[in-house]
Length: 232
Image (tube, rainbow, N blue to C red; front, side, top):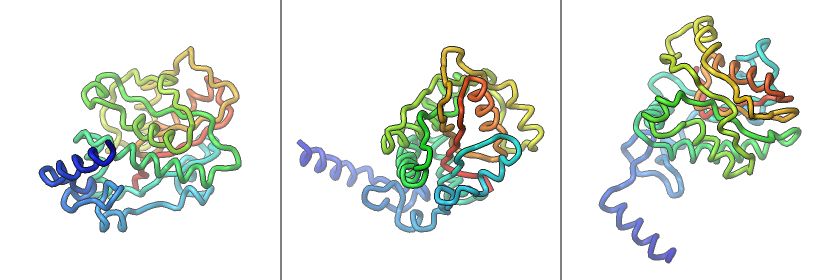
């Protein structure tokens, strides 16, 4: 059966060739979603092996974090920006699953002092999730869980306001915009747990900060954060 499925996959690939999910031009390398050139040039961070990193510094003095790390840096008009656009607006949720597994391997290798006990993906508003068909942060968490075994609690937080994009806002505007955007689920007991917050991109950190504060109010003892990318 496995041989038959492999042959069928190869045949379909001849008719509908899979393209790199970064450049959408070349064929991806084996067992990868990206072509060799894109994979080689992806701006990976060293944040998992460097506890005092620029992600953590971005939230310095705002909230106490155990670990914080992004897999990639995101620059304007970069391969990563193209990838994120495909993930969020072209239905390519396999990007989050694939990179989530890479995140999981990095977490297992480096966060051995006090590993997270559960994951909470940053929620989308129900209207936006219905339109998109999935929550990209939850898909990322699924990939992480696949390679680490860390359980996901997807209903611990809720997005109650369907805000506009945060991209063009100042830090003060972002903070104001998210303060009332989320609420915690009163039935989610996070008492004394080490919670890993998962999001697709960290920019100012306002969204993750708001979610972390709600987790702490729900009893979480320790907060860590990870994202697919960090905006530069």
